[in-house]
Image 1 (cartoon, rainbow, N blue to C red):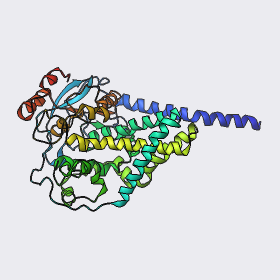
Image 2 (cartoon, rainbow, N blue to C red; image 1 turned 180 degrees about the horizontal axis):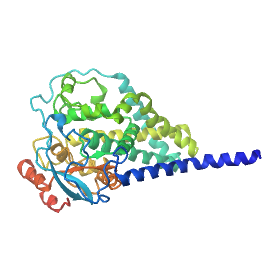
Image 3 (cartoon, one colour; image 1 turned 90 degrees about the vertical axis):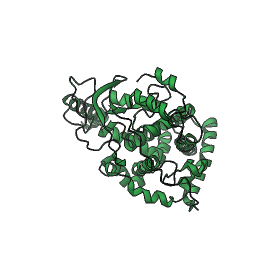
Image 4 (spheres, rainbow, N blue to C red; image 1 turned 60 degrees about the vertical axis):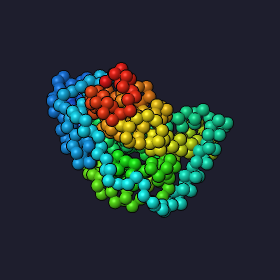
Length: 408
């Protein structure tokens, strides 16, 4: 009879993950149907609701999408439709982040180099070059495909998570989606979300001045990666206290990552991506490690292009007086983040661009898909007439005809 016990034990072990997954799915489905809790999926999908209320979808949130600058945004109570997803249209053009123009662009300053970070980046850039060579010569196709998939994973963590959700609150996400995006962001190894959000809000409030952590007025290299290789400018440190981070402090997902970053980030960014190819398809340690290094460096530099290239070259259809520009090439390689002139004028638009339906804006499609599943909601967009008004007032005259053809 001992063999029967072993068989039953094996069956239980094999079936347990499926039973557990089924139980979790059943629980989620029940919660979604009853719409009794927003912890997992938030308010029910727009397609599932029988009637709509004219109040804010998430009554538990008291933080407006731009109050970290002390200027709350007024939002219409009417519901607009965009790609069959419930969105909230902003009522005024006061979605612009107020930029502090009292600071100088770039005063004389001798930066203190962080040599440990310089060596860290030098090693990984060399390792990345070797990783590309290995990917073309000796790595298994599964390893290359896995590295490509990791680029997508960490990119959504940065663009949909750290940027559009946590920094600008251009849409709201259920706890489940927040956790997923936090984990995706961790694979990018771009420090913790709290610091990422803080520096990005500084960048918008003190854009292109000494208060900007990656001030493009100090040159292309500094705005790309040089700013990370030295200690912060005194003006950046001084202005940090002006940024309201109360929403980050009150978010358990953000604080969990911040508290456990010393083991969480290296594990998700380097250890697991190296071990997975070795365990599942017997890749060599050398190939697995260096191809993951290439993935890390490629992802990091594409994000940094927005801070450097998108503040130097491109066109300015919305405000010709600021440095941020538009570039379809940058948008193509950054999942839709290259429409930077628009973003600095309307930072709270969840699409991050005037081309909400463009194939270049993959991140917007990802957020739309999450909204379709009920994981994202209260997607904020800027009405077309306000966009056109701003283009007429401060733009350089380009893109007007294209805007008329854009589907909102």
